[in-house]
Length: 87
Length: 231
Image (tube, rainbow over all chains, first blue to last red):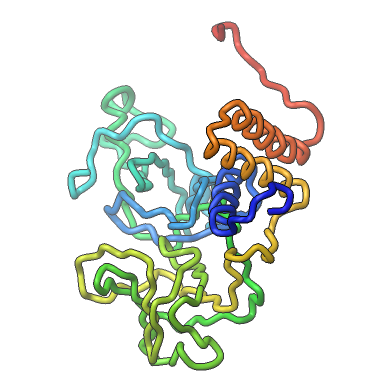
């Protein structure tokens, strides 16, 4: 705060938190990995609430039979066949 | 033995959509010999919602903001079983009735916790109340169901947390990136003061510093190869 020359602590901390988020979009400083169960016929899954930027999405047994997790490709469009709940 | 599968994803709103390629072709065709009807528009029908349930089948690697610091990673509780929405707030339930207001957790109104392996509830949360078998958080939860929902994994609840709320706190980032934070805060103050040129200058310096840090981790030059159709 001295380097910016401000005395309003709460406002400075709010901006610092914004800076940390903005910075993690450009360069990742803190990375986490989270696993979810895949459910039969369920297409949509929630992202973790604290996520700022997706780095990789992997699935178990993606193009392998060794239980390895490998990155999966992103589709440009949506598949014709909709989810059972109409999404 | 596990079988090979083929998944893909797309993003819709704040949801991640997972689809799986269904290799069961009609007419006895194999993977290496698709029929003519399996390509083009008809081929698009091969992508469906996942065909099977797979425990821990999906892994998301992501970046998060270090606006908190876990002081001691061994100060962790793994007894939380389920969660429920109470009055629009998230309530964590421990069916073993551990008292979270007592030592060692000693949680009370205003305490902070961090959840890991908690699916979409990962991250920092502020405690509203704690007692025997429950922790109520200030985190919004709009689930209309009053039925307790189980976590897919056993969540880790870290309770010795230093939340960024004082000017004496230290940021958990490299020294070089602290310069970028200074530029960002200066830019926001300049914006508040209506000094837009100064704001642009500091934001440019912020981005330049962050990008320099990022490129400093890569050895050699970055090479992009084009092809003749690029103009």
